[in-house]
Length: 127
Image (cartoon, rainbow, N blue to C red; front, side, top):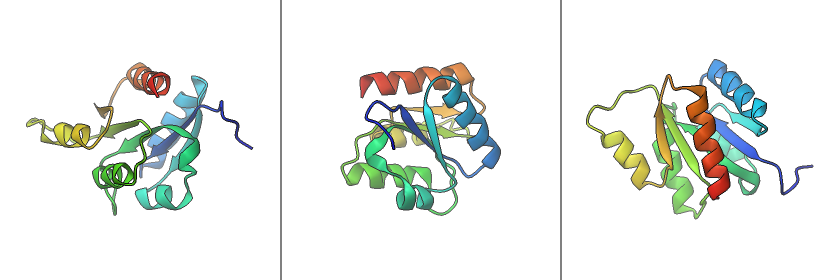
């Protein structure tokens, strides 16, 4: 059973290797990582009320990460969301779009593990 003090970070990414690597990193920093392979799986299975932060890949097949973010915000879910993507965005439109939709930040893959931990820690503290 989860307690109120659990530092649960959900991770949604369709790449299994990325899920394993980031989950291991988060757990090494004292978080409990719960992973999902798709937005649909997250919507179906996640206990959203216990999640302290969501790390969300924007390049998901099916329901994309940006669409999931907008759906979550439209439903009133205000948990911090950190977006990540492997797609470079020279125009800045993607970053602007997800930040307007309510993301805390956007990280471009490959990113430094310390950078990810810093933004997750910040999101968890500011929640």
